Image (cartoon, rainbow, N blue to C red; front, side, top):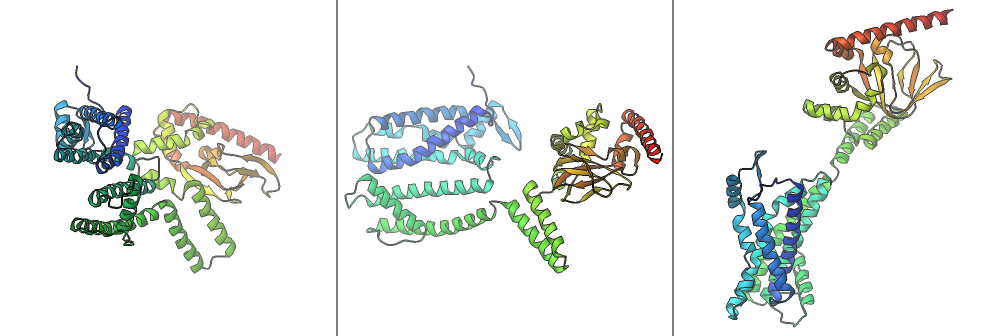
Length: 445
């Protein structure tokens, strides 16, 4: 029975990779301690060692039957998959899977037993094979990338500190006769103070080997310290890059307003406008972001954002899917601040508006009467698309109002490509024109 070739991004494969990651981290923490403390391979340790070998052998079978991507092309050919795995990590996986410790510990020779303990450290080589899982975590879209980078940086620092602590215990032995827990705590304390270049000097080397080891760790610590500080500073600066860009933009706007001596009230209104953009859109310009996308993606995002609004408009009901797409792709986002006049009665209208967020008031010419309040999901100004007639009411923003506009020129250009629907629109326009003229005659009488 042939084992099927697995997709590298399938749920089962991702779940298996996470299990291998957890097991490998556990091994990295436990096996160095077993080596230092010289625990005999009995009871739970024997079961644990046997379990590791079984899992890692299973992992070799799974990895040798997992497809891979090459320049975004999925390679599923069995021979190609195995050759790729043989080149990239088979050797390390085999070394990690062979139970050297279990085999060599059967001999009573002290030298062979020491080699057995050291050979057990080969399982830690699996750390170099979990980079795909780590990379998948790093590229996760669910969390802020800066937080992920910070977490991974701390993870690798702690792993390195643990391995150095175990190495220090192995080299120095236990001259003070401490228990295992105290030995590890003191060793970890020494590692942290040395790596961070603090070095209190209360734990010092007493042999040439220990001195050489300390020098090496101090050199590593000096380089690591600069690396860590640089990375942390970079991560903190980029934790919220949108906020940083917004603050930079606000500094430029504030400087401009001050340079041009803009009145205080107008300054406050402009500042409130940018605050609203930050709160509602995190400072991003929707139009510019969509402009960077290829047309299929742009269409999909626009349909997701605006289909519900368009479908409520009577003049678009019954239109084809292609026509709706063209309309949605040509909508332009616009924001009105509280008190702004969206349209004024008597002016010639050339745009129709769709309310995405906020509300507007339909008021009389002297603004003494509020005829209606239109909320999110409403639309107005459709007569402008049909007739280019004067506005028959004044509409004023009640609060901050996110709208989408569609101008008549763009609408007419779209109608040219849809002649059947254009005919229907012309019929509707004539009916509206007749209704408008009839109303005007009644008002004149």
